[in-house]
Image (cartoon, rainbow, N blue to C red; front, side, top):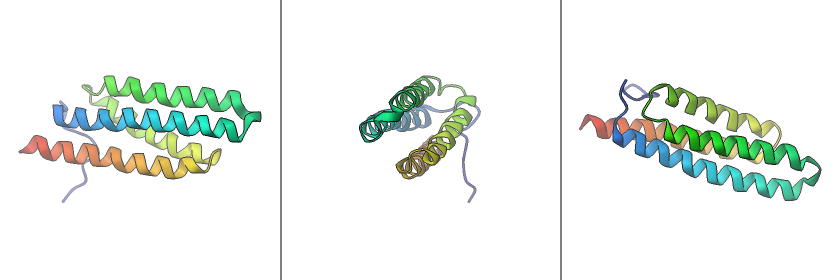
Length: 116
């Protein structure tokens, strides 16, 4: 059994829908988690808000670009960036790992559905 980290050259609707669902959910969770962090660390308010908006916007834009195979590579990059934000906000390690797992599952399950 091989791990599927990228969809077929032309991603199917199943892959796109599952991956887009993960990205939209990720955008919402990350944005609201970072808003909580603003309340906990008001001295870093500007940087946290900018980071939250950038991450959430990137996830939403990528959700709209999933008809292109390169967008899935960008999705993996986004997952790595989310995990890396754990260096500044420790709870983001957990959120990043959870969403990276969901991202991998969406691609894998979507690809399996496409094979049927």
